[in-house]
Length: 212
Image 1 (cartoon, rainbow, N blue to C red):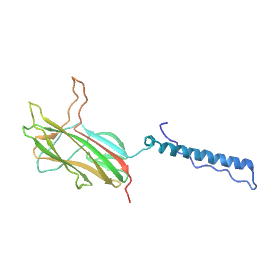
Image 2: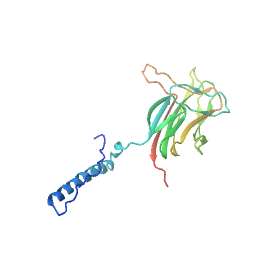
Image 3: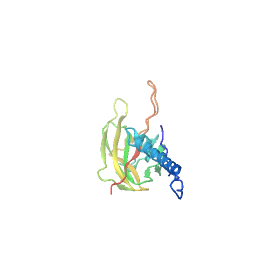
Image 4: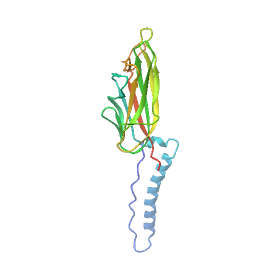
């Protein structure tokens, strides 16, 4: 079973003026069918695999473009140019992951950093909701130096729980202590055959309603 059918409210027959066995049987049968439908829903939803019937807000995005820092004293919003999936969580202005409904959301991301310099350099990555930095959301990553003629690479990955209201948006920002560090997309390759590496991947999914 791939979905559950929501039973319609029962269309109860009109009662006769006097007691009638056929009416009672018909009345009971209508209610029996309705409650059987409700029981089917609750048994499946509360069973061990009930989550497969739930449709919760979620979104996923990626970028197939390099992103660079022009200055070491500026913060840059991370942008996306590919929407992989969107259901009530959507992308606005290329960087704003926006919620349709209020709730607690799990934001997960991975960022492919590259360093062309011969020294190790650091980057910071953090979240901002509606343009305001989220407290304690920053992480610092050290990007390896170029070695043997090959750029240094690191995947920066993290997940955050965020309390969002309807129409709120969250952005990821980054900065670096050296402009030799960039966010890099890597093309598909061979020997062995392997897919392209997006410069950024992010997903955002509804976890819970907001506690009162």
